[in-house]
Length: 228
Image 1 (spheres, rainbow, N blue to C red):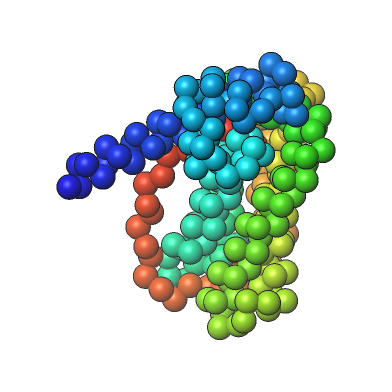
Image 2: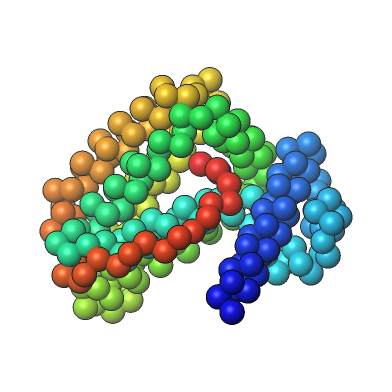
């Protein structure tokens, strides 16, 4: 039974990846607004219903990779070890994640994504909605861990500060890539920028939401795409 579930999950991941890649090609060729979900379905050789099963909104076809990484950031905070603060766990994954920027493939993907988003007001709105949703999810987690209610201002402020570093870094990297930066130079710059920004938060947040729970082993997850 375990094998069957594993095969089923791999099939779902393959279908999701196939749809994402088909959409990415169409968006790169014609722009986001000119492509319909029906065209994405035809290009991926699946039904339109299947596309919506994996991506509830057309905009989600662009932001799948972004949402995956933001889920990992929240999980890093949730699964941190005893004595570790939320900012340390969040920051470690954020800095380590910059290593993938050293590849030329990453710079190419970022260029395409930045151009696509920059040319579509609908995608710009959706990106802000995605960020707001995950900021709220992080705030709820921090409030719960510190024994506060979901609307606690301290938790909201801490979550906004942490996600603010992430989003400022995304914007910075896009600007660098569009200016011609790539490879190790880009990765080193991003790590430096992240470390400096996180250091500014350490003084205020290092003693906030420190875990007293045993570390939880990381769940294995597969990335869909690079969309930084």
